[in-house]
Image (cartoon, rainbow, N blue to C red; front, side, top):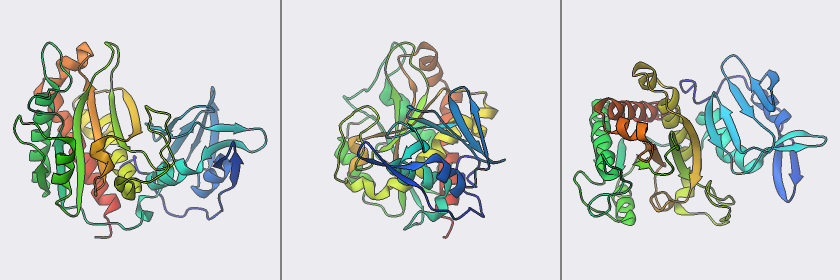
Length: 322
């Protein structure tokens, strides 16, 4: 089990999923998922439906795209449907591309070694990224990346930085750096911008073919190069976001970040990458509290420690055959 964030357990009941066509899209009944994954308890809290065992909890709500697996938030590609006779339905693409890789990481096909971590500190040079009165995003990204590099090296990883100084690289140059290496993962580090009240941490993976990104309703039918890693992408995002929100670094340092969830996007650095890849938004520069926190060595150390722990958990669970 991936430290409470990957949910695979032995002895799954081997029942077939019950498929339902709804508004031209294929869905799976929640009752058949409950049976397949051995979720023995079903209960309701308000409008939310909760399915669980002693070690696993899955929480959904009709007409919502939010799903919680072991209290970590995931944003589905399509809302949960309440069918008049079949009960709750989850889109098949979400089951295939999100739920199953998290519930059963050892069943992801074409597993490979993990030896190298490519860290991409976002922005740089003339591109400062988000800014506020006290910081520039490009500097914060690099500071967290440097702390993460040191921690990963202590765990025996080869670490490659797309930039180690305040210099500009195009998005494609960052991808080209990453694609020179084998047996690697790619982690792009950023801080967010928005309203003064916006807060929290979110992790993005590449949106699968046949879905829209979380911020757009435009569906892309064809696959991109990065979609070859869809299952690995969501596994890596789960491990990292889980550690950032609920891991030992957050607990030991008293950090309680708001969980904005694991989301999908088609950012350029994710589209043509040949490795499992995520983009982490580490907090909001537009939020006064988070802006001040982001400058502190203790917050940067927490981010680096949590992301490092997530990568280690991912390696242990997904590359376990090696």
